[in-house]
Length: 332
Length: 249
Image (cartoon, rainbow over all chains, first blue to last red; front, side, top):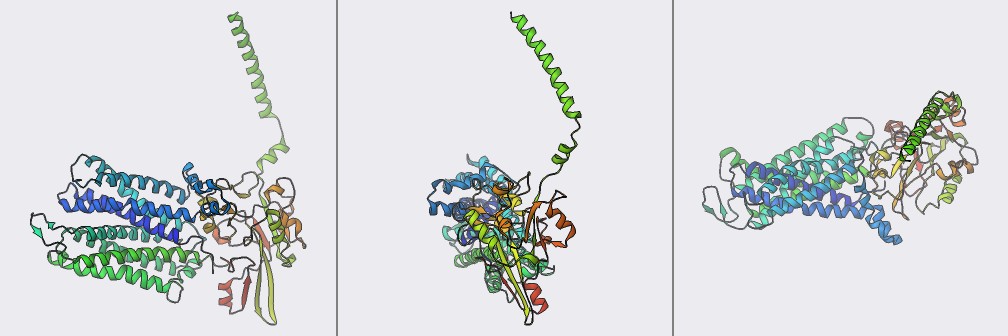
């Protein structure tokens, strides 16, 4: 068994940064698309959940990777206090390393997401208030920044021929889709937890709480589409590596039937993390999509879908990070 | 007085400028064939390991441990045993391993702080322990598994061809100690060096050439068999890495 250099801190970081960056991008997109376009107050509310959520997972995840740094561990072992802060070296330079560029992008993204969250902080925040222009500016910045954070992790892992499992351009697509889908799920979860108030639809009428919700249609429908793209990415990821020769073909066998991560991947990631939420969302979204029926989804189902998507997102990072490290180049 | 000062300095200036120009012309036109040759050619230290002469005694590993006080459980230099075949058709080969000091080192490409770099003067890939943050990205990127985190400093560490010895004109510790003279060290770019001659005259191979790293450690008669080959050839194979990582990466 190969040694695993990057363990749970890095896995959690990849997941949390993905969710945070995804939430930022989704929130900013919803705000920019719906803020001035007459989608009404509920879209602003969705953007608000995303904005308030985004910085937290990114900051927690970033805090976690510091635990994986060799210098951080050594600081406790040999009592060198300054080693705790050696990571500052990341920000004293910039190199062409994906990790260097990624650190800068991540730092800028966290700062921008904090400013963006600040513009939503007041309970009275609404479209067109005094922070509106700053909010819109941060939203414009947030879409590319969030996507950049989501894809840099895939580029970082994919940049090494010595790790054939990761060395695929499709990994970037997989991570991006998972990040966006995780961001939507995070927003959906917050919305399902906190949105008890009677809903006001565009016509101004009130609906029973948690029964009818026009705005969550957007979230569930987009999550469903994102999961569709993620399934496509999984398919491409496996096919491209399986159809090649050499190290990549050998490495992918770790998640194919018979491989040590196969169960976790097919049951955990694909079935629980992708297919089940997609099918549930399809059941609720299709009547509205096809027959223009009023979109209804029980809050409990919404929560379960969101949690399952997040669980699948974590398992995906787990399988990818571990799978990449227990496989290596063939030959010597 | 001021005027004369100015005049004086101006005169000095003109004189100095003339001298400078003359000097510049002189250096530019001075024929120095020997020196020009020396500066054109960069030094690239390389090692040739003649596995036919290796008896797997681990003297190189021990010398390396002693030279650097390498922490327990970590290895800068190690010797792998490759046993294969079924009695009576069996063989046991030895494969001494170390950092390949690649000419296109993936570890350098991925280092986010610039702590690891390839020295221009001798082609040795080194880690600056004062800059490294211990992110382990280089350990992921190295196809030879040559790197480890030194638990004392928390930073990446690896073989550096005994830079402290080589820079003083002494052979690396492993080369110095090798009983069978299986390790030959020298400047690959010097056509008169033993390594250059061996590389030119012997059928040398490098490890994992397909990784595009352009390694500078060459092997003569190395056994490149790995698990995949053994499965395909339906033969018994046991690789003993003699390090904490029981399997080759």
